Image 1: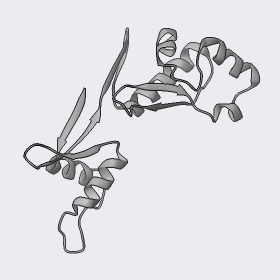
Image 2 (image 1 turned 135 degrees about the horizontal axis):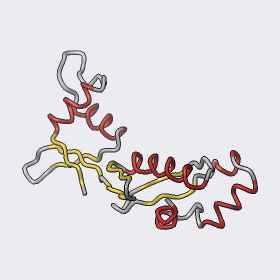
Image 3 (image 1 turned 180 degrees about the vertical axis):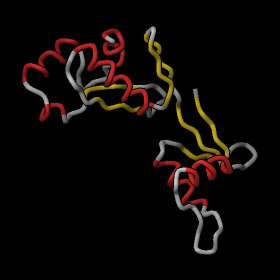
Image 4 (image 1 turned 90 degrees about the vertical axis):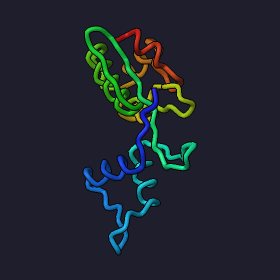
Length: 140
């Protein structure tokens, strides 16, 4: 599902979060709005009426009785917590949704932070640097 936000709604959201989006004369700087929205994971585009809109993919993962709804970063962070509760290892995961499809995989920093035994366990469980979302969801 895509969350779509109109330019004026995005401006209000950015101001509420403390972003300075006005130029020296107090006018809204659309370039800053686009840049800051991008830092929050939103993509910008013009709709059919030429109005600037912002969108990002929203995912829902249900593992009864728990669930999460959010962008790929929010979902990944929730999955990390659920996975740690299930396997007893604090694992850093990475996520992306470049093609509108959620991918979750093992972050390369784990090689420095985890023991050889922990890395072997993750590999045995099918959690690798390739997309491991289905395997992880089966575990949690």
